[in-house]
Image 1 (cartoon, rainbow, N blue to C red):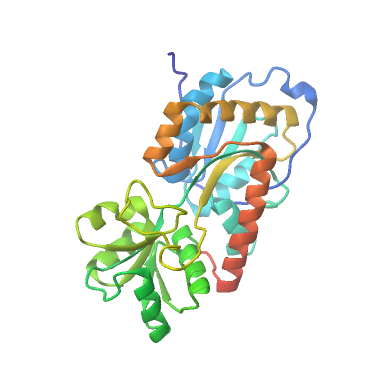
Image 2: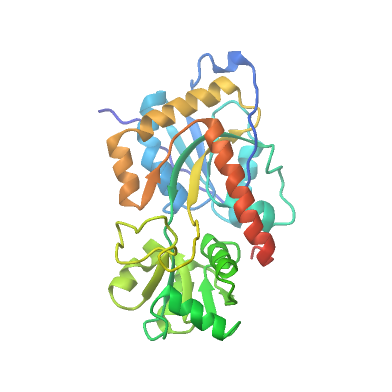
Length: 328
């Protein structure tokens, strides 16, 4: 099968949110797409959002008949990348690969250079994953989540945990855990997940929150003890790690990713993109790619994605406001 090329530029970036549908001139959709489509990613190549887009890009290009240009714009918490899309021409030739930052940043940052509820049109929900984990140094007395909660209740504020920075998914998820468990752990933010995980392996900080892929090798080598994973069911990649629910805490840690376009993108264009994406997401090879990285394929209508975004905005906004979290 002939593969259309995926071009991959790069630059710098900064936040996120979303909005309702745009309505445009029907004529704009008649010959769509007639040129390459740019998919803007707010991170460097190799991250979760970038990996999601690359998992579908070739097949999406084939279905649409035009190349997908992946435009990585890392830095600044995705605000630069998101602003770029918000201000792009609403013609369907610029789309944004949205991840949790789109519903985190309206609460983490005091000012955004766009309106989080009006400047984007949902296209399609692509995937969900729940790979955030809580781990401890092997010498730490608590070997299970229940034991950690008991220790924290007995020593309020005295136990430290590390994350890759204020406002990251593992940080916000751990704050949710604290609220549900009614415990007080002290957050120690690092500049990256790698640094936070290293702090836990060295014993500098006894507890850490991070993604499955950041801890998997270290856990298998006995350098970290995983306590729980924030998924509905155990991960096939680390089936030995119990879920938070199994540890007594009902926590929904799912991370949703999908595609959005600038507001006012013609409805007909949105529907063409949506139909193409859904066709790709039903391909067995594509579904296997997501399974291999611990994700679940979604798909659905633009309205489905709008509902997901609103629900996530409400859920995580409550956690962030309650915990008083601010971005680095």
